[in-house]
Length: 120
Image (cartoon, rainbow, N blue to C red; front, side, top):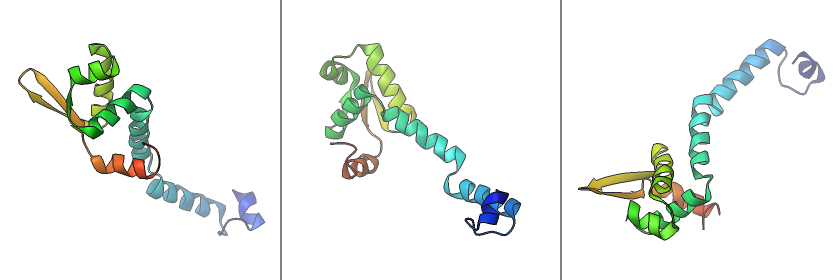
């Protein structure tokens, strides 16, 4: 840090003061807890089957059995993927009797991802 200050690269006169400013900036703009939550969100999307589930649910609400048939998944595998997406609030579920229906929790997020070219 001291070398940066002496080289005039950083805008401070005191290395320890500048280091504290950098830590405060990181806490404000790159909060560790928020970054961890965002990381879990993106990890929940980092699977081919889960992306396919999302694309189906962008069309309409579906029950587990429809998702299983459409994607040729076993019930445990479908439930596993749906559980991961639900845990991260990407999808939501609604139970009607013995049937469980899934839908996108927040279409705005996925529409934003489409605009960025992350989903087609």
